Amino acid sequence: MMLLEGKTVLVTGASAGIGRAAAIGAARNGADVAINFNSDDAGAAACVAEIEALGRKGVAIKGDVAEAETAKAFVAQATEALGRVDVFVNNAGICPFHAFLDMPAETFERTMRVNLHGAYYMVQAAANQMVAQGDGGAIVAVSSISALVGGEFQTHYTPTKAGVHSLMQSAAIALGRHGIRCNSVLPGTILTDINKEDLADADKRAYMEKRIPLGRLGQPDDLAGPIVFLASDMAKYVTGAALLVDGGMFVNLQ
Ligand code: NAD
Ligand code: RM4
Image 1 (cartoon, rainbow, N blue to C red):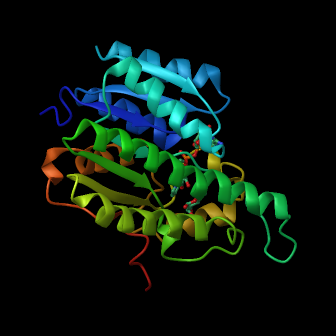
Image 2 (cartoon, helix red, strand yellow):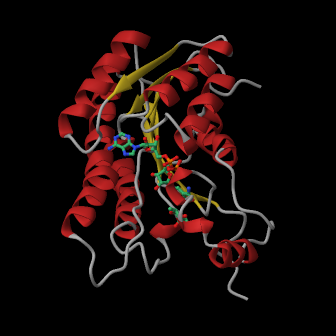
């Protein structure tokens, strides 16, 4: 079954990792897809090529989500290319692992700007387009298990992920009257560029693996189904919800 047949889907940070998997998952389910990317031209082109190989329209639009203007430009250009916005997936994010006591102010502020300010402006721009269209829509934000639990080297990052989760809850209230649903996915530990260096530490990797009842770290494609589901009419009465996609890591106390 094609869950997003005839829909248009926008995804931020989709030149790699979870964003790319979400974009391709949407195309596989019948959607035309516009992706935002920051700097990886080859990755963005490869993602678009894969969308087109699935018989769907694909377009890549460059821009740094930390800049407020990027959001309006992305939504405007995507709408011009694809006609409308049915689904918006806020995914772009960074996590430059660093200790707390000597966290450089620039690292803290950049992480806030990309992950939280970027999400805010993007979701606002997409919502405005959906409201103007007048027939609802779906927003899915990629938050994290780290919205719920801490990380010693993520003191700048976990508040942004809690913020994105909270943004979806408040936006669900603000946009419900427009028929726009807002939900988040909370991935556990997924093997992507964001944690390549961190998980190069064999002890850390083994520790993380041991915490996961399903017995393996996640792959980007593990997020595609949950994101497509929340974006689709299968989830038509789901809003303000958060879906852990972590192989059971969160519940594994003992
Ligand atoms: P990734 O590094 O592969 O992907 C991050 C994407 O965001 C890349 O495409 C990157 O180019 C893009 N990006 C970064 N800064 C940007 C900017 N300023 N403007 C536009 N795009 C930008 O890592 P990923 O794991 O796929 O991360 C995607 C999202 O998933 C992030 O929000 C991250 O917090 C979240 N997440 C990841 C994990 C994990 O374990 N990998 C777990 C939970 C949540
Ligand atoms: C996630 C979670 C993962 C980590 C990535 C960077 O939110 O904390 O364990 O590897 O972020």
